[in-house]
Image (cartoon, rainbow, N blue to C red; front, top):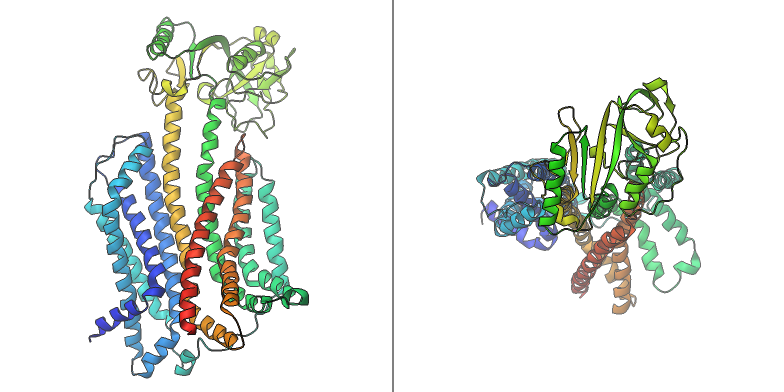
Length: 636
């Protein structure tokens, strides 16, 4: 038997331990490869959605690669620790230090090359389906299957470099001191875990503060709080597992009523050791799971943003004509003609608009021109859009800042303006309750003023707003393409009309969000599967130690039923403690995200978390079955 054959058989013999690591690596290679297939597809044409999709997938490639590096490095270091006894036997039979390093290097390279080959093969088989879904998501013509040489070269090159680097690094991790230390690595009695009261309290403090800041975040404060909250949560979570959880377990051990009840003594007495031993793994699973939950949850919440679309675009087609040009009438007739041709029922309403010059303002981004609408016209187009109108009429020089998006104005102070006309200073009371003109149609900023003030203001330009209101939003998709580009024509100095077509804007927004959701789902799946892999190979790394422990207890009368109960409890702790902590982290992250929305995102978030919980339950029962089967086999 040659040395390479020996290494190959060594991998096959440990296939149960390596299975989860290998499959997770295959899945990472697979996702990386199918993204590359999309990026290098020759039929991807230039366009807003296609360009964004390519950028998203390129970003996902980078995230996936960095994550794969960390995942493989952690996995390999865990395996090496679990195999010290095996290394000791090999060295006792004459294996040199250099041969041991070579064996570890070859093992990692064989697994890596196998993962690359299998991942790319599965990617070729499923590539057609991925391209069809991807093209459907961004609303382009279905992409035919195309086996890109660049995609293969990029995937093979990137992951060969990754596995080669990790394999070289593992030779440094294999530290051989004395043979006796290698033999006793899995048999040494574990020292009692020690905890620091200060670090335990620090963990609780950091988590409580970060939860409080997340729960009380507003649209204005969220961006400033995000990084400190993430930092405090990560540090707090690490100390939660290494210190606080062990501290709480030791407190539980002092409760005799709880400890001396049935088999609680065995479960609780080993809990502190398990928490301390698995602290780093719990920490990584929690962080990876939280990232997966938040990535998918954030994109699913976009569905709520789509529901807010009607509030941001009250008229399905909006048209503002500057001055009094004859072609405006022709374009309005063209809009009506297309609506009638598509058999879309609609109502329409027109209001005058004034544009006045501004001398100064308290806005952080001051504008020199303001869009002005009278209060009575604001009321008419609000009611035309179907809003329940409750705002009180304005009098004298009373004004309201014009809200042009549901994201605007909720927590902002009203902007004070000083006009060039008589240096009149206007102090808006607040923002308007409804959006009547989308932000694409408002030249810089806008005000709603009293009817009395509206007649007194001298404009530099006048305009007429025409809104076409219908309940058939999707039928307006693609309308008036000769007048607008991608559903909008925004204000500029070289045009005399502004326009939005809501159906086209909605279609573009949906395509973009669907693509982002698709990418986030795949990344979330990779993170979630990797988190499951950590649990799997940690469990099997401890199988030999657990077998000896349970064999000893069985000799003093432990029944199979009691063994099942103890193992189920301990596995449940292993599987669900990090997931539950990740759920809590995610719940507070979603609470902060809620500040971006007018509508509630609670239902969407509950569906996402429930979906991950069901997946974790299925994984738990599958692993429990296999673990109990292997454990009982070892106890015979």
